[in-house]
Image (cartoon, rainbow, N blue to C red; front, side):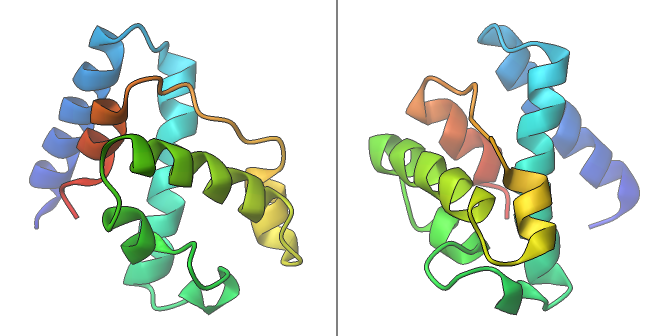
Length: 109
């Protein structure tokens, strides 16, 4: 995937979230949480993320289960023993209210 394709996917995600009333700041926050998980996988450094709360675990979920899992993931990582994870995810919460939005955010893995 080239840079232009990545940028296009990000804009598509932005449009999905914006259409559902999520602000730009909320969008950037959601994207940060999700992209961090994806980058940890891409860089093969997922070992700092607790098993069961990694990128592939997120992709396995759908609908309401995905939304619930994502909420638990944010809490789990915010309480992590790893200082970097704690710093990123402390007090993290999602603004996504519909499961379809959650799936749309992660489907293009």
